[in-house]
Amino acid sequence: MIRLAQAPNLAIATLWADMLSGVGFATTVQRAFAGSIAGEIPPDQALPELWLVDPSQAGEARALLHALQHPPERRWACPGCDEVIEGPFDHCWQCGAAAPGG
Image 1 (cartoon, helix red, strand yellow):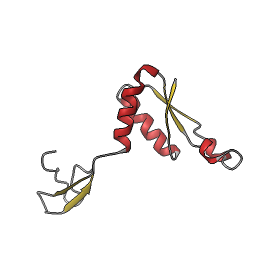
Image 2: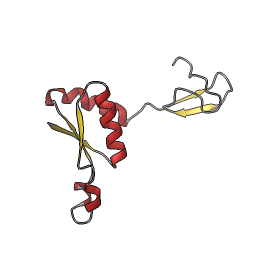
Image 3: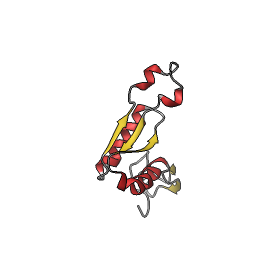
């Protein structure tokens, strides 16, 4: 096993692990409940960690994790209602229309 990353909280760690596992990277979350002893150990040692079972997949898994951590930012006008949408969204929040070209 090899450590991929520390997560800021258990929810994010679980989300990342589920997304990586869903595409074939067997992943576990370690230190899931160590946050309860933060203060007795240094806070950075109490953060949940994401571990990859197969170290030979580390490069691909890190690349995917980086993509999950840094979604593309876009700005587009909705073709259905002309609402300006900013961020990594593929659908209009107001009318539900799909982004152009997406």
